[in-house]
Image (cartoon, rainbow, N blue to C red; front, top):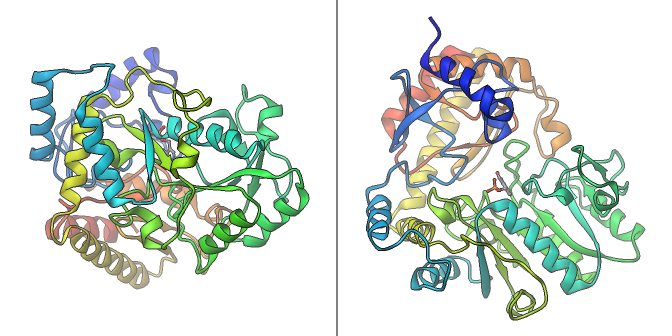
Length: 424
Ligand code: PLP
């Protein structure tokens, strides 16, 4: 008898391409049927077949306070009694904007949008308008949403023109995106040297999450900052994933770098669809209606998202919030390393605060996508399903970061490590 998830997936496949509304949910890289969930609370997800899982996805990042936080829910409920959307100015936009600025003072002015993709896409348009240059540099393995300019494969040589990664992306546009290697500053310098017409923006996930978790090596982000300043290129930190995650003020606080523009998503909406881009006032003032760069959104700054985001950001300032996350991360990391060592399974574990990845690889370290790709994805798939069977819900790909929340504690650690031991 098929499970309820299996039955629902059969129906979904008739309705949605691949049965899903975002590709990685389809379990393509680990095989099997995706689970259907009916509720979530704290550190746990509950599926339609009455199974309970310790959640390491957190809705792909937003749920840093845990699912269904009572204060966030209260804020949303109270807002529902007032309005769902105004499509006009209201005070809750200011509330969230101020909360963002307090945590990220580099953001002098910002614009709310409804997703991380929109934030990154708009930031690039703005950078092109501000610098009057066309080309952008991104890094192999970094993901900035599904806008055409970002769906570009890494060429084997750092300075090669980009090739579209997806049919439908116009080659001419893709050729404006140049791909460098993360943690390899020379690959960036080479591109600058071979493009005297100039580069509008360098966009980077300061801690990569989309090739699995990869940390910047000492000096890499500082060097990027210097090169961008030297060439009058805007440095765009895509903090959709790292913002309010790797520290309260994001990667820019952790590594003490001032990007020209920052893009945000995920945590900023507390589980509702909110994104933002912002930075220096002189750049942001180019956005319509104060400037000529057009960007708009029917539901941008919607009050439910604003209140969910503002409440979530206020919770991050509670005493010990990040210390507790760090403690959980340290214990999880220690436990996983010990088990892998005991079982003789080679791993590389990369962690930055409450995001981490376990790469099943013989490589001594993983500092770029090329190395990440050497991981044993077949092993990961088996490991994944074993973890699932034991009640631990990980992202269904070797090349995604695991996230945990403030609600993950001793009990969840024990469940996870027991499952890990059985799954190796
Ligand atoms: N940038 C980064 C670093 C992301 O991780 C993502 C999504 O995972 C995006 C941009 C796109 O955000 P969204 O899925 O909200 O469009």
